Image: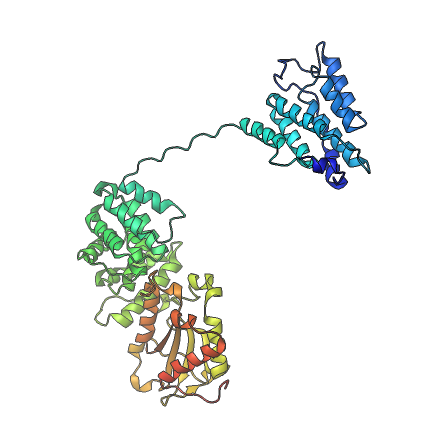
Length: 509
């Protein structure tokens, strides 16, 4: 145990740190071994106590230091032991060749500290632990173990953890949805909590939390979505449009049409009742229904009316409402040929998505777009494709090619890359015979969590581009992830383009 202490190998650099410790001041350390409660600064024993401290501080060898402690048991107080340890470190650290110390003498010092450390206060214990460790006493030796045990005894006791409250089904569901760690594979827990909840426990707040959770994490779980749809139908009279917009959100985002037969009639009644009360909530509900291709004519006629448009024009959310109305008008143009009601005036229309979607911007470093662009550059040449082009009425495209009627890829800058919009108003004879081929990246986050169903916004974009006359070439993430390096990716793109009957000149232009 004391080999480090006796071998004169103790580093002066390590022990010099001890000299920076402030001297341990005599203080009242509580009842000691001899039952003396009096502070060392007063009373008849004050002189001998302070005299012993001076003797310890002036000891000229380890042997003399230990003799002063051993020969004066009635005068030793708790604060003398840190003084002795510090003086011992000074003697061993300052002399070039420290004198040998008998092992039995040092064992006596350890035993003195072990026997008296129950009377030490927490500060004295910490100082002794620090000095003993720097002197080389082993951490599993009797001295360090005794001091560490006393230190733990003086720690305030930890209060017992509170018992978890007994939560019922609805409370358990709300607690789970409110937990930030509850994100991965929670479907079974949610289903179980929902099944155990009584009808009166499923409040609008709980169901909104559930809807937001499913939408945020792209969880297309039919049983949970059907539960939300049923709740909406049952509680129709008690729900306002601001709550309904949150309950409907996951259906459009997850591209899920519920089996609940009263779902659409219920929403139509709510829209008829609330449309003039909360304009933004009304448009949000219609946006979700637009993704599901379930737009009610009556609600469209209302939101395209001059009164509604004038009403929202002076509100803080006027721009976002106009953008949504522009998308709804596009859906009417492309998907509802039988609609004969009001339409959004041309002067009120704005680009639908003037910038890439937030999810694409946030995950751009995980996207395959850069490597696909490099593959197309080496395969076709830079002049034969356009990247990130926004086509009317405001849909972004990943890569766009112009192709002649015989399948030859044409330089894009020599052509008008846009197809006319709206297509219904353009006579077919005047159309450019060149085709527009759009390569659509289908990244992993463009799908619901199961990886099989496109999110509603993505499906809507592809559907509308196809209806406008663009030929779509999807590039699924599974196929892109399987390509190992640029040569394999170029071969993959070549096969994809040739399968459409396209051809081009020498690679790279």
